[in-house]
Length: 386
Image (cartoon, rainbow, N blue to C red):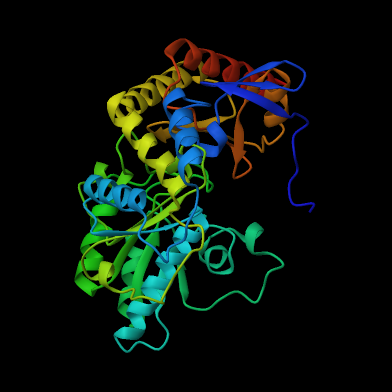
């Protein structure tokens, strides 16, 4: 179906942070499959784990115990401080799980219209519930009627949420990204998540964090909420969890971990042996190769280099980010930079019309990072001085 505006290139091979097209041309990948391939392309350990599992057992179903699913759940709950996990196939499904969990919790409390507070400029997926929760009219347009049960407030604005708390007794949860990726690489104030945690405690709401993009090391820690020294009630994951193999997860703790009962929610493919083998090995490589520290240090290095090279350039608004998500906001729309970069054999992304977004693999070397920054800065300067 005509659902993608595809770029004129077909990739046939990858290794580390490099991709080759069907003409034999090599490209430097600063996008990592949109924050998916944290280990880069075809990491030998991940490739071996997938092949070995594929030769043994690919799928049964969740009608039976799945040993690797149980191992992965134990690993994720240990890293996050959560109590249990539900496995699915994507970030949208993980967020759909969280929304259903919050609504069921509300009905169990006798609330007939359980309501979730969501944020402007957010992005949670493209199912009906997750696109309704998203603060993005482009993904909603044409799919009305949207669902009820959501109240939207500005991101990084505690006063607005407090006003909702005073005036709406049907609220059961807050759904928020620790930083917004699709919304323009928006990083909140340092105390934002802590204040949200306190408010949720005060009103008995679930704090549900969408870490589909920020989780599994992208922020420089396993989970972005760990920078704020809090623990959410629910956290959703996907993207980098399987290193390129489709898998999503919804983790919960405390009361939130006890909401679902058998029959409330399910997934045919979710957490099958192949996907879980990929995720287990991805987590192991991140830990054993110290890639959390690598993501934090490399991200700081790249942002500093961007700021130095773009200082004083008219039309550059801000360089921002956390870990290996980097945003360079320009004063004018710059979507055309994606094709200009492709012509120079560099893969980047533009989101929110004006924000260049980079999501490099954790295994990127410093020389490659320097190349990404230098090439991107050259493109920006050429574009703004055009």
